[in-house]
Amino acid sequence: MKKKPIKNQLFLHTPLDIDLILAVVFLNIFGLIMIYSASYYYAVTTYHYSPTHFLMNQLKYVVAGLVLMVAVSYVRPSTLKMMPWWIPYVAMFFILFAVRIPGLGWASHGAYRWIKIPKLGTIQVAEPIKICAIWFLANYMTARKITEPRVHWFIYASFAFLALGLLFISNNLSTAAIVFLMMYFTMMIHYPRVRRFWYLIVVGVVFVLLAILIIDKFIPYSETEGFRLTRVRAWLHPTNELFSDDTAYQATQALYAIASGGFFGKGLGQSLLKFKLPEPHNDYILAIVFEELGVFGAALLTYLFIYLLYRIFLIYKECKDRHQQILVLGVFLHIAIQVLLNYAVTLGFFPTTGVTLPFISAGGSSAFFTLGELGVVMAVGRQTREYRIYQEAEKELEEEDPYYRELKDEQRLKKKRAEHEKYLEKREQRRKMRNRTK
Image (cartoon, rainbow, N blue to C red; front, side):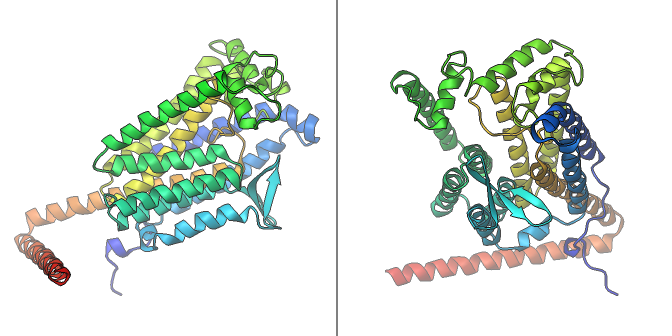
């Protein structure tokens, strides 16, 4: 039986990235401990569940996600490149609009953000949409030249439309911002002329600052105004009696908890914030980390995130394939942006949003799909390592075997000739087109 070439095999055989796996496992263990500490009282008093209800629910998704991560890491990531770019493109918009399909979409607190699957529960649509967005960017930016204006604007228009859809269909501004920022920085890093992107960033920052100034100084407060406008006011004036007991309540209580934790905290399970906040195991769980484990515990958690992102960045730098680079960069930006936004909200540097802290906040679908993304990152690292081993072995063989070296030189020469003939053919086609237009 003829053996397939390495590049045509479906599965990878190089060792797993143990350092990356350990970083992921430690983050999830940290998250499971904090979810139980933050939620046991809330589970009993609010829903009359078992104290371990939210812990066991998260554990189920984490175990499934870890299995998925390892399974995906064995699949060659180049298989994603085989599919046309429009498949993930159509998929992300189908998932977006699926939340409004009767019997499939599921709403909570006035937001359509979930799809209900029988016997499996609910899935937050933001998570598979992020994966499809990363996949689409990798396939499209590899198949097309990003420097072409029509390609450039098609990507902008697609993600602007997706962000607006997330905002108005799913009522999910935070995910819209994360998806758009992922796209923007991916294009910025892989675009040859970076200066224009910095100009747009400066313009965007100035626009946001002006908008905040106008809201604060020139638009009078009204009880009927949108909740997002009220959140900005509450962020600017958290102690104002109009907001301190309502919109700014979570933010101010979180800051009190952080201040009371000190350097080593009150001790695991000793938080008072979890008795005051609604759903303390979700968006503001970082404040409970500060209160129970102090600055030391929060610094340890931050180190785990930094180490995880560092391992992903190393894989991105070592990879030479453009498609795989964009895949890894998308996952890096997804996790980094979400962590930074959650830290900024908890510490009072940003208005309250619905951004969870990856692996630490409760959220089964978030943990499951993010672990799946990390499986793709691990697969890219394994394939890069495989190519490097193969190249080193081939180099040693060329040095030891003169006949093999001559054969490889001949193959390189044929390849150069074929590329030159292709170039001449394209040049002749362009010349004929110019003659026709004359």
